[in-house]
Image 1 (cartoon, rainbow, N blue to C red):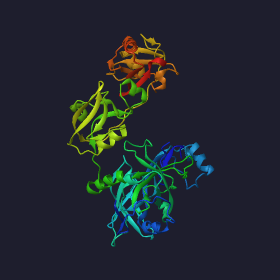
Image 2 (cartoon, rainbow, N blue to C red):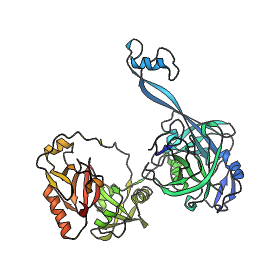
Image 3 (tube, rainbow, N blue to C red):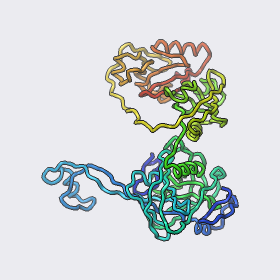
Image 4 (tube, rainbow, N blue to C red):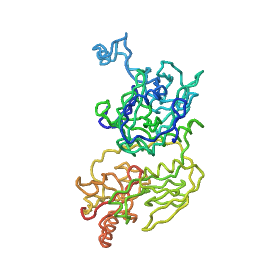
Length: 494
């Protein structure tokens, strides 16, 4: 396991640094509200909800390359390494073969007819899935739909009798410090119950564009992926997904998908087997204090548009690179995460007002949202090695950088695309202001304070004008491997 966090489905753990009236087991019960103090015991609650928590066992076929052995060798046998080292008996060459791997996770039944919620990473690419209830009964399960972006999946089992089930609650009512109970069915051992409090809300662990996790300190162990987090009224307020762990075991920092994020996703999966999302067609980034100052904004709330995809809804509506989105369809946008979420939740074909900051003032643009397309493969992020300096370079002392025009020679030397335009950063001092903003040699400056630049002199002129205008921050548009983003540089420290 890595020192950051890991998904908590056993066997397929992946390092990543891993309602007003709730219906419990088919009987509607009044929700008393979340307890302000610790309950005397969680035993009654655990007894009611645990039968609806299941173990999910999935079989995956993995393809790998290795040397066939002349007979079965125990794992770790010195003869195994001997045959691998000498390419097997009689010089046999490595061959690609397949092996079956079993993944264990958890899930919970949300409908008496057998619909089950779990994590996508528990069942992703699975060949066979089996669900085991706490009473020991087994059922083959089929996948109704999955959503990798939120790591959710919906399964279905067929039973001759109604199954025990639980329902989603309102995660927006959960406050930091509220008591919660996490239930899992790891390793087929039966229901495992742990209790704790909500440590934080709105956690972004950088696993997807819709990260908005509840952080809980109720221990979540290996194999608990997909299990539910309950409020004290017995409703599901989260889906256990990941843990922070230096060792792979629980250290009291777990993450659960809030029920209010999961509910509409699961409803769509149940209805159509997939999730359709709205698409705006922009690349966005966070506003830093320096960018806020450089753009003349009064706060760092909003989402900065780093680029607009040609032909996208944003382009058709007239949204521009450098606009800061402050509101979307009447909702305040505080961060890029907010914009990603509200756009995704907007139906394709809907026309919504988008409030932006542009050229020192606010304006509203009407945008017709389209359906999100399938993702395309990302561009290769590698760059060739650069030996020697490009011709016609110029050292700009204010930036601590060696700049060069973009020519056929520099495009070839630095692996730039044929249509790249701007000023190449050929070299950079390690302690320079640009380096502190994450800029590196091979990046291309396209604009300085919204002025297009094509030569080192253009950059120097833009910086001199900023000084003349008493601006202490220069806002630059940087191209890296075809992707644009803004950086703000304190001119005084350059």
